[in-house]
Length: 141
Image 1 (cartoon, rainbow, N blue to C red):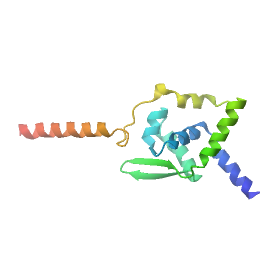
Image 2 (cartoon, rainbow, N blue to C red; image 1 turned 30 degrees about the vertical axis):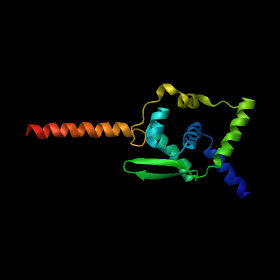
Image 3 (cartoon, helix red, strand yellow; image 1 turned 120 degrees about the horizontal axis):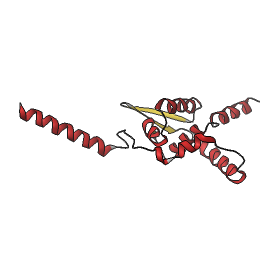
Image 4 (cartoon, rainbow, N blue to C red; image 1 turned 180 degrees about the horizontal axis):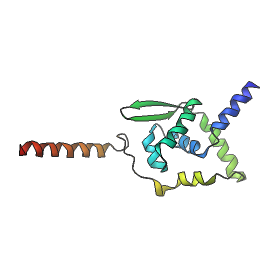
């Protein structure tokens, strides 16, 4: 019976559309919270709460790099479960995903991610403009 309890807990973790969307995003590899915030158009705190549930379930791990926290899937076999659910719902169409799924998948809300990993050229340009501004100040002194 304990095995069933553990399995039921895992399905509880997967029951939220935002968590499924996060896992799908992480399927492509490590992502920072700000990347998911930009991609989904959701608040950082909301995404972090769902990431905490996924982390507590042992599905994702995190690492800190400066101000950014990057998440990755720790148990890639979870995608077999997700893919099986997709196959079941694609053929039966009996389960409605609700408004959260449509909000998450809307590309209208997607904005650029500000993190250094996603926006390396922007960071370089920002550093160059700071250097130019500093040089101008030094030249006037």
